[in-house]
Length: 304
Image (cartoon, rainbow, N blue to C red):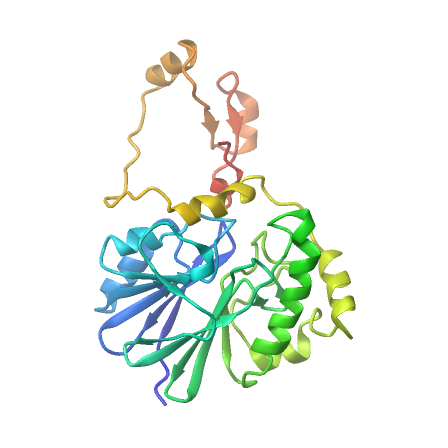
């Protein structure tokens, strides 16, 4: 059995992981790429690979997908047919299998985190080698189910319980699990430092999977939710339609202080974000500016 090399690419600000998979024939697939394609392209170039497939586990609420950017560079986008993407892609049904570089990628219906959610089982022949669980089974947790609507939160929580029980816990205990959401993500319930796990580890140590039955699981899951940024309620639809395609990634040009002052004083619709540390901002700043210190979480805190 050939075990493909899987490279984890972490976005510390989002608390999410994407994965670049060396398929062994000079090609690679990327699972849940973030907006900026640069890290995946650089990693593939470093390894002498060509990215041929960009796989989406679900319509993301916490970030804009980079699949369209990879598609513009020759990759095929693969996503759940139920997601209804409006840009070119291959829509998968649950149970469907794709050949990827001689390996097999199987779509597993895992609704819960989102209604259309798929996990992907990568196999070499009859031997499973990796599970990309997206927002279903996480390290020591499961993903939240309250990002669609209050009316669907409990319904999705019950779907998630059944998805994990019926689709994922039937897989081998030693199977490596690669979740999208991890430490620092608003979609994760419990913080933690590790980003990869196994089916057996989660079966025996995940506190949510220790619930005695579905009702106990739902009560424990719903009782752990915190707040999330309001833009989460908009990004699913943006990802469904397809984020703007840049092709060549834009470069932000620096502005002279006088230009910024003119924009503010002339009543332009601008927001000035002061990215210095709070003590520097407190010592003096442009009137009306917003203090958001530059750190990995900068983008999720920025005003619209």
